[in-house]
Image (tube, rainbow, N blue to C red; front, top):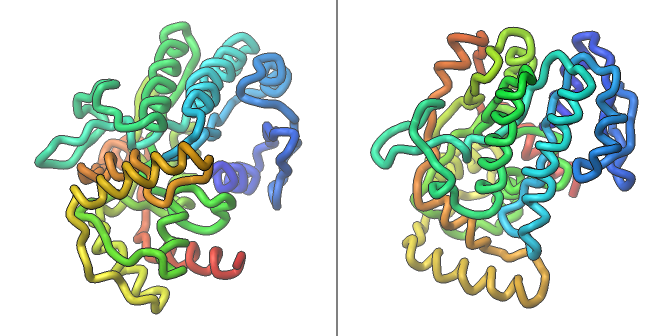
Length: 310
């Protein structure tokens, strides 16, 4: 997502400075690289010095970590560090990238920015860390930093380098590693539309407001049927009972804790799947002019990207 946001900003004529870790490098982005780390406040102060705006798009996006404290160090402490640096150096505008995981999901309906939600509703360390990070952003807003919060749903498209857990769904599907499915659902959106939503939040978003950047609510079965049509890989026809998936996740994640290898079925992913993460994005449409297009083109780009990488 950060790559797409940076590319869009550069295309609109903004001069960019990109924070990169010592082990990372910029790819096809017209930006001034600055080496640093979210966990190193001094490097962040140097990175944001002289900047008029900050887009905090970075996060440790994993649904399993052998050492969960790493998620909190990057997502919570890192967010607090960079926003404090932005405030202390006089940055005039911040767009903070949260996640749809911080949105409340009513059991029998569709969530939005105002659906009640608490930390206790967060399943797993990733969602908990991002919820706590959003609260850290609100602390900085109260301290006077002009922050707009965006909550992307499930972005798909090209240049998913790692891949993220989202991209891994598509990669596993086209690789034939999805023999069955759960009765769950997500809201999917083209990553290019998410990048545009960040720009719109920067230009017209209200300080302190949060905006869902999403598009289509799809069950996992509906997703696989879309991918079947676009990739030619047959969609699985077997639905796994939740109890079976839960048991497999417990075993897989326990074994991962012993071996240190990422689990095939992360426990937190199955916990999240118990509730469909369906949302609406009318607030972003109304206040930002956000208007996402159909997601099929993004699915096609993701398929092409992963096949080309292989």
